[in-house]
Structures are given as C-alpha cells and as structure tokens.
Length: 150
Image (tube, rainbow, N blue to C red; front, side, top):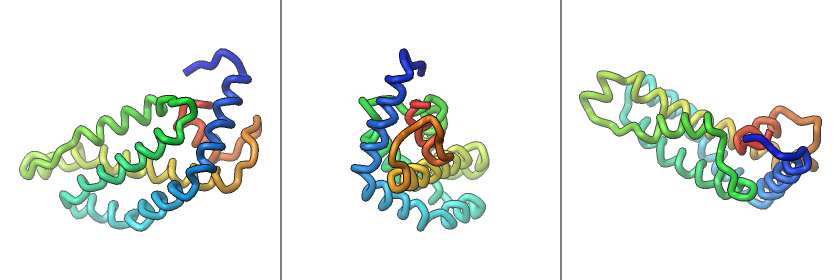
C-alpha cells in the first residue's frame, strides 16, 4: 500500500506500536504457545503426521491477534495473506494428502512458521521499541511489513 504522506506512515506506525504494547500480554502468551510447539511442528511434518493440519488452529489465533493489533483496521501484508490462503485451504484427506505430502503440508508449516516469526518480532517490539522512527530495528521493521506500514 502506498501512503499519501510520510506523516500518515508515521502515524500508523505509532498507532501500531501503541496497539502492540496494549496487547503485549496476549502477544507473549501466544508466542510462548507457538514456541512450545516449534519442534513438534517440524517433527510432525517430517513424520508425515496429519497433526500438521491441527496447526491451522494456531495460525487462525495468530491472525486474529494480528488483526486486532492492526492500526485503523489495516489489512495484513498481501504476501502474508497469500501464504495464509494457501495454508488454510488445505484439508487432510488420507490418501491424497499422504501421496502429495510436500505440496499439501508445506504451506501449513510455512504459514505457521511465519506466524511464529511475526509473533516474536511483535513481542520484541512491544517490549523494546519506544518510538517508531526512521532508524528501525530488524524486529520493528519486520512488524511494520506485516501490517503493510513500511
């Protein structure tokens, strides 16, 4: 998305930062949930377990939180939305899914991993970023991209 002015971009990033700080406990809690399941998610993928599909529940929780934090109801980055659509459209069908495992399961794991990365960036930003300025940390810059505010 393009911004009409630098001031509008700055305003949106400040609103985002304030929203993240207000929702910090939720961000921390969900990040910890994802982190507890990080090795299991990878294991389930390589084990070719249908439980990979259960990660869609956590993805939906992360997206709900991201949308609640979004400044002025902004949409999430279109590339992230594309990754989500690929993941959330997958349904486990015993013979088909197992025979096409990489095609079917990889989008779910990719979306789940991206949610974890964005949650970590949000958690870090909510704790460490005081003002959204021109010089950005990696975590804050990534957070801004999720909300298409960079």
